[in-house]
Image 1 (tube, helix red, strand yellow):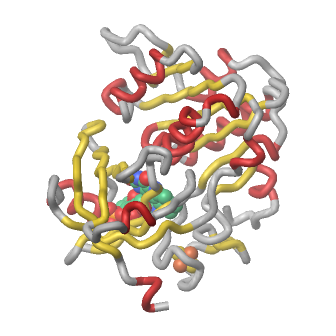
Image 2 (tube, helix red, strand yellow; image 1 turned 45 degrees about the horizontal axis):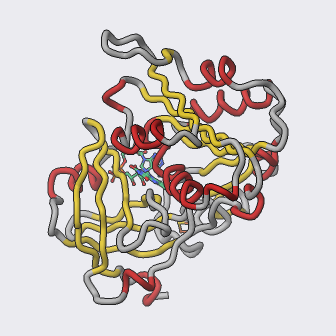
Image 3 (cartoon, rainbow, N blue to C red; image 1 turned 30 degrees about the vertical axis):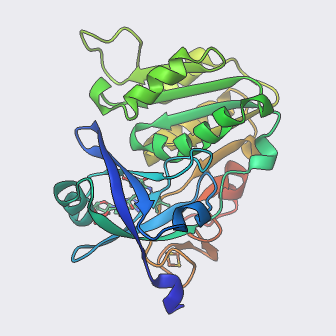
Length: 277
Ligand SMILES: Cc1cc2nc3c(=O)[nH]c(=O)nc-3n(C[C@H](O)[C@H](O)[C@H](O)COP(=O)(O)OP(=O)(O)OC[C@H]3O[C@@H](n4cnc5c(N)ncnc54)[C@H](O)[C@@H]3O)c2cc1C
Ligand code: FES
């Protein structure tokens, strides 16, 4: 148990200011050879520790198909994330435990149309899978990314979104909540735009969604209205966590441990969880 809880030291290779309150930290292990042996799957997470401050849970926001580093995109939320934003710069060191949790069902989505639906920082776990699927593009059919944020400056990964828009094999739909002078794309919350742009009952499609709980709730209602079945709707949950590996009992919903049995669930799985969720 102690061994499992010992963080490995990572060096911050790069810091990218994504939005006013989200920064992406590009990480590499300090110890020679460890990066090559660090294996993760899209949807998994790490426990990220800052000496003298504390530990937080973040998904791995990049795909292992992009070699030599991994990214964590961190939104300023409370005490530890504020310390991370205020105190950490390129060259600094942090502790990392993991990777933990299950991952997106890669076998089930192979050969299917993919519809990614993200809101705000919720694009971070999707980005890992999006990169993985782009790097294995011939394994999938239609590929649509619907991404929304409150304002245009709150959209994460702006440079990478431009690359996605330039990639003719992807369809990218962006939206913001309210009109802005320089914004010429969609305006409206994600579920509203979803109902406008997605044709009902798309066969052979897997939907992967992540965002604020309110967005996920209404997105799932819209998907059901459009005729998508529960096993085809996949999401990733954010519960308060501590150990990350099923030991502390901090994250359970009934007998389900979000850190170990999740964080990735289909909407069919979620129906089986107790009402407290
Ligand atoms: C599997 C998983 C993956 C995550 N991935 C990311 C990620 O990629 N990027 C990112 O920015 N954040 C992510 N989070 C959320 C992140 O762990 C919290 O925002 C962070 O721990 C807050 O720490 P803090 O000390 O700054 O805030 P605190 O001072 O602990 O809390 C500040 C506020 O945030 C709320 N909060 C704290 N933790 C969570 C949580 N887990 N879920 C919802 N609300 C919370 C608190 O209730 C409080 O209102 C993830 C969480 C989980 C469980
Ligand atoms: S975080 Fe400790 S049991 Fe899930």
